[in-house]
Length: 216
Length: 216
Image (tube, rainbow over all chains, first blue to last red; front, side, top):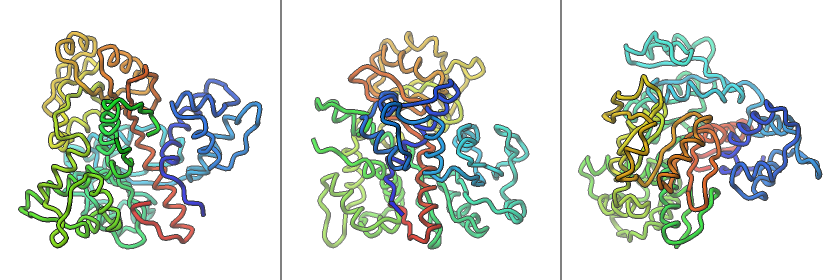
C-alpha cells in the first residue's frame, strides 16, 4: 500500500469542507485552479493531492464535485462508518462534539464519558455524558473502533489503559502527553501548540525578509 | 535562514512539555534515548530535531535539561514575549485560553473578544471577554502581534479583515475556512480533522498488515 504523505492527508478535510459547500451551491465541476486559489497553495500541489485519490480528471472541466468528494472520502477511509467514544468533555472535548463535519466523514461518536459529577448526565451538543466509571459496562456489547482522549495530561494514560483493555486499537489523543500503549495500538497525538510553532517559524522568516506562503 | 521542517517544529511543544516536567522533578541531564523512548519515535529523529536548535550535546550525559529548554524556546521564537488577541470564546477558544503552556512559550493572550451577549463581560480562564464591537477601540493603543480566530467558519473572514485592518500580520486560524488576506499577512490554519485523516490512513495500513509507528 502506498504510504500517504501526511500534509496531503491533512489537507483533505479542507478540500472536503469546500467541496461540500460547492455541492450545496449546485456547482457540478471544480478545477484544480479553483481549489488552489481557495486554499492559497500552488496549483500543482492540488493536482498532486487529487492524484493520490486516483480520480481521473476531465481536461476541460476538471473534476465532478460529487465524484471528488467520494474519491477523497474513500482515499481517507471515510467512505464507511467508523464508531468512536470520547472521554473528557472539557472545552476541547465539547468543541469536537460540536464539529459537524464528522457526520460527513461517517465518523460517529457514539458515547461520551467524563468523571466530573457536574458533567455526568448533562447533554453536550446532543450527546449525553456518561460516568467514566461505567465505561466497561456501557461499551461491553459494542466496542467502538476509535477512542478520543480529551482529558488532562495527568489522567490520559489511565484512560488510554481502559480503552485498550476494552479492545480499542485506535486512539486520537488530545492530551499533552505521549501515551504508552501495547504494540498494535495506534495513537494519533494532536499537538495544538504545534501549529503555533509553525506560525512562529514563518514569522521569523517573514521578519528576515523572506516570502512565506501558506504551504510552508 | 534555514527553512525548518514542519514535523520537527510540531514536535517542539511535546519536547518542551516533557522537559518542563523533568526540570520540575529536578533532573539535570536528559539523553536523546530517554526523549525518544518517551515520544515513541526513533532516537535518530530526536537527535536531528535537537541538532536543529544548534545546542551541542555532551557525549556522555546528553543535554542539560535547562539548556535544552532554552535552546528550543529560542529555536521556535518563544524566547521573547509575543502578544496575542483571541476572537471567539466557544469551546475551542476556551480550550486555548486554558492552555497553560502558552505562558512558558512567552505567548501572551492579552485580550479576548466575542459577539455573544451571553459571553461578553464574563470571565473565561481568568480572561475578561470584551465585545467584538469594541475591538478597534481596545486595541488601538497596543496592537497585539498575533490574532487567534476561533469563530465559526461563517464569521472568520470578517474577523480576519478587522484584525488585518488593525495591523495584525500573523493569524492563527482555527475556523474551517481558508482566509483571504493581503500579501504580507501570514495565516497558520489549524485543521483539527487533519489528524483524524492521518489516524485513518494509519488504520488502513495496520489493517493491511503493515507495522505502523507514531512517526508516520
